[in-house]
Structures are given as structure tokens and as C-alpha cells.
Picture 1 (cartoon, rainbow, N blue to C red):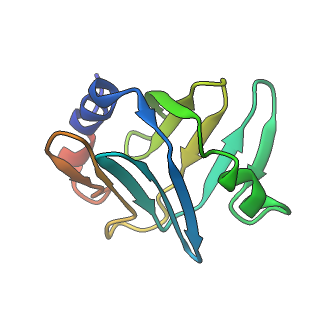
Picture 2: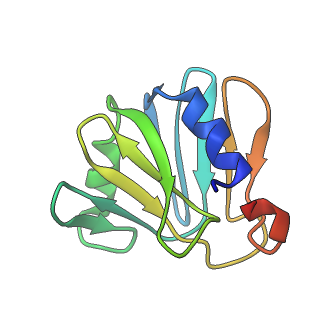
Length: 126
């Protein structure tokens, strides 16, 4: 069973990434009518391997290169149902890892609701 928030993201796809901003430690991506803000670690995967993570060499260039692609789907990581893994139009995946329970990420979608991650709340993952 998918957590309730995942269905909201999937139903809003595709989401064109028009802007990418890095203001340490916050990553913001967004487009017309939507935005995603995270203050947690993340990884960017290609088809067969990790491209870069939030602390890796060249990460700022790698995330800026997300602009122009689309989020075409979203899944949760194996073993965790509190964080998104965005599936991009070119096959890359952008995965997030909550390391705190107090609003590690938020997402405003073109249609309500605004999603505010609450990993400490058992209802968040149902």
C-alpha cells in the first residue's frame, strides 16, 4: 500500500522542472504551479549507477542540469515510506533521505494539498 502523499505526487505528474536552487542546506526545485523544498540529503542516479549525492564533488552542476527535465513518476525507497524518489523523464532518479522528523521536505502541487513531510507521525506513511 502506498502512503497517501505518494498518490498526490503521482497524480500531478508530469511536473516540468523549470528552476533549481541550492541554498545550503536547502534544495528547491519547481515549475509552474509547483515546488519541492528539501533540507535533507539526496542522491541522483543514472540508469546503472549513482551520479552524485548532496555532498559529492560537482553536485551543484549536476542538480542545475535537472532544469528542463520532467518528473514523470514518484516511488518510495525500499524500506522507507516517508521520502520521495522522483523518476525523471530521461530515466534519472532523484532520491531523498529524511534524517530528521521535523519537516524534512515540503511540496506544493498544482492542486491541494500542500505536502509537509512528517516522518515521526505514523499516519504519514499510510
